[in-house]
Length: 441
Image (cartoon, rainbow, N blue to C red; front, side, top):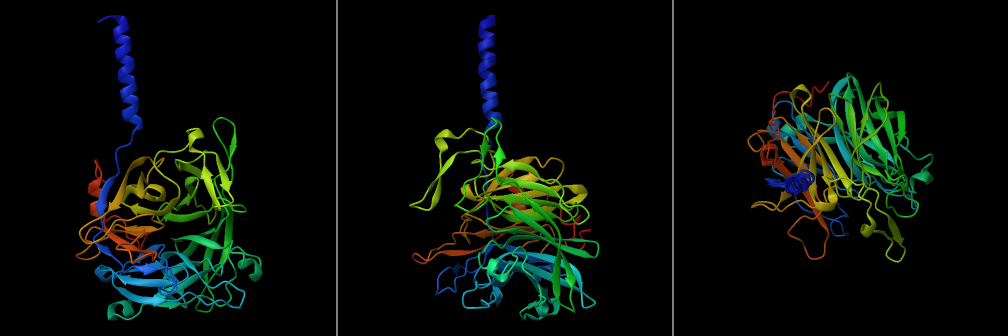
């Protein structure tokens, strides 16, 4: 073969190799085993819109653990692992005629917070409507007896998380995303702000047997970015809005915050001595850097995809949403993020530089429909009885089926962790022993 032919062949192989290296494999597909009742975002349905789940692990019988899900204006629902509703909690009413009512956005769990001298497990909720963090004590005895297990223990004097006054609360640039963690005997909550780039780190405190909080640190993520070609870009947003964060989770052992800035990508922020360290953007949405215009008639952004400069990522389609961390032994495990724009979930290595490992979707199955436009998720590694003996992934479904006419319906889907782990070409770890969410430090 001539030198020129060899050169041409080498060039052709290089093109094929480059294409195969840059073209990710198709997302794996898994199916959920259980789903919760559909809720409806209309007057007849109590304006219920499912959004974010958390799971509380029962200390003596994990098979009767409970799932807590936010319903926005409709408050909270509590479910068993069979998907059956066990309790409903309404959001607070508006304090005045012109004030906004409570609206529950995100939820997370803290184990063993010392309240009135007793170790108490808490469900913590971001109340977007009133710009507060609400706290609910979880009663294991009530769970065992089949009684409603959540009780409001929020201190009466908690102040707005971001707003400087009650009138400012009603402008609704308020508490939005939420993630909680513990450090020895202290408990913390990270809260993001709606339509802003701001994060607050709050420390919980006992105020006479009820839960209050104080601000420990604040962080503003960027609202505009310098692209590799030197031009400046800001993400698509309605007038007066900045690129917000909602989906967040904290690595409970390493104290690292993972925060999804919806139109930007996934951030990694170390938490050290009750403070934020320098944020690092570990992955970008595909739309990152794409120019856009605002259509005033339709009141929406229009991306100019024909002039996409190609600076975006390959694994997340805007919005980047729900984030959760699967903990395994020796620092192993995974960070999962919802790629809402293409109805998939991206998996990253929990260790090192958080390498991307692959994506998966929750598709239609015999017992449940698939998951679309997922806002929130949570995962635990521990065995949860017969139905979920190797852990569970819980995801919000933004289009629950079957539909009831034109009514907008949503719910939560429960998927065995082993179904996710084994769906990858190189299976993810299944580690039920190395991490205990009740003793994460």
